[in-house]
Image (cartoon, rainbow, N blue to C red; front, side, top):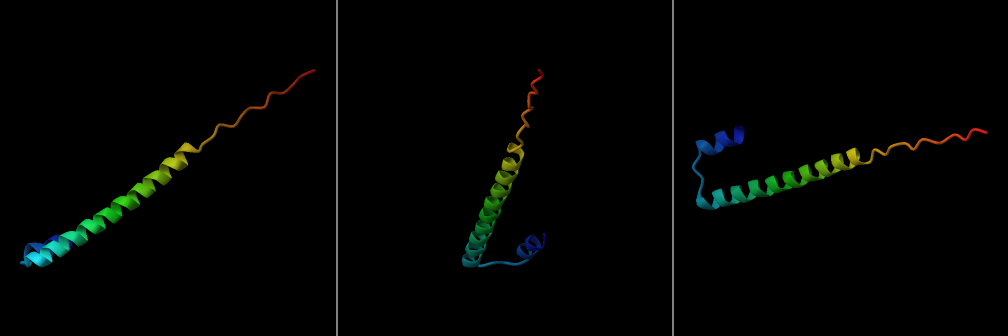
Length: 60
């Protein structure tokens, strides 16, 4: 991951490190929320398969 390489060989000030951590946590939360939305959509699509009712034919 390119970001890890950047942070490995670069010394960050405590303020920059805190800001970077906040940013990454915010992005992680956004991705988690989006993933939850996708999973809910998939769950809804799988759940709405209704069985067709068979019509009974009346014979005389």
